[in-house]
Amino acid sequence: MLKNHMEVLIENHLPSLIKDTAHVRNCEKCQNDIQAIALNNLKPMYIMSDKGMIYTKLKELDLQFQSDIIRELVQAISLVESHPRHEVGLENF
Ligand SMILES: [Zn+2]
View (cartoon, helix red, strand yellow):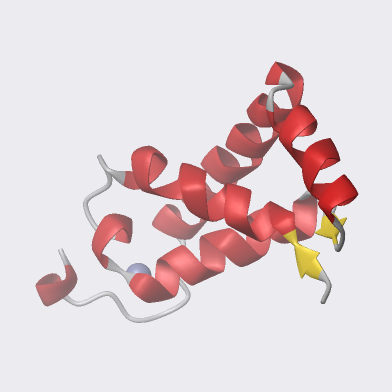
């Protein structure tokens, strides 16, 4: 079965990056939006075999690779924070 490992990496990084946001950290809609935006801007990383898993682990050690993911996530967070794609009521803050 094919899996886009980039989804896992993004899910792993997201919580620490949104922990200081007023709204996004409690909003599943915005979090999904952020993940979608970041995933569209990053190369998918499809893995299938054990071999692919080893390659993926090595790639995860690459600092440039990690900082690319974080950069895209930070951009997506600020975009979604300033323009949430849903009505934001006071109860969401
Ligand atoms: Zn929201």
